[in-house]
Length: 269
Image (cartoon, rainbow, N blue to C red; front, side, top):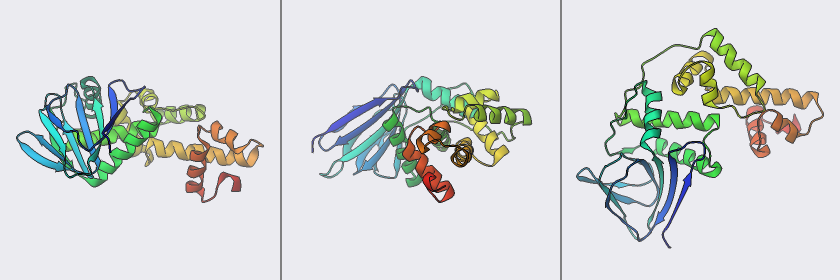
């Protein structure tokens, strides 16, 4: 099998590049990067050397490499390995870290390997969604991106998360509801909802869940599906028109979400 490397820039998140590689012969000499790398070996095993030690990384491992960290990598065995990488510019990770910690300071991150199959699987799923669309603007993607980066940066002790409790004020909650009802057929982003409340994105996520008991994505998805029920029962619109009217631009996604919520396809409602 020949070696192969592909990169994809995420259009609406400058500073983020996704890398997918399959290596059977290629090995990385000692090198460093000017950006941050989050690495995921999804098949096979890679021998990774950094910080004076050598570790084996495979499915279930997450490797974190900050700018300037000297490291190398080589496959173990004859079958090779598959590597997926999030490459984040210093500016991008710095802005996310500020959002998460409330401190305008670049995170102090050393090379590290985390063994956590659940988190690794969640990162792979997020990678696949971003790679397939080339975008990160969907509310669910933005929320998961912040959640996972918060988890990684906290576990690696690169940041101290904000210890802040509380809920949205009645006025903030009303503004969010009014906006979602008024823009239900459009793409609604985390940035837009947080700005309505004059909060950072991660602060908004926590306060929204404290207020509602659901994540913004889960609440908005239910709102769209409830409106879809009303439209299906009171109008002559096609299922495709209903789907678009409540913000679904992929009818198969609408069908899956509807069935999962109500136990029946839209055509059976």
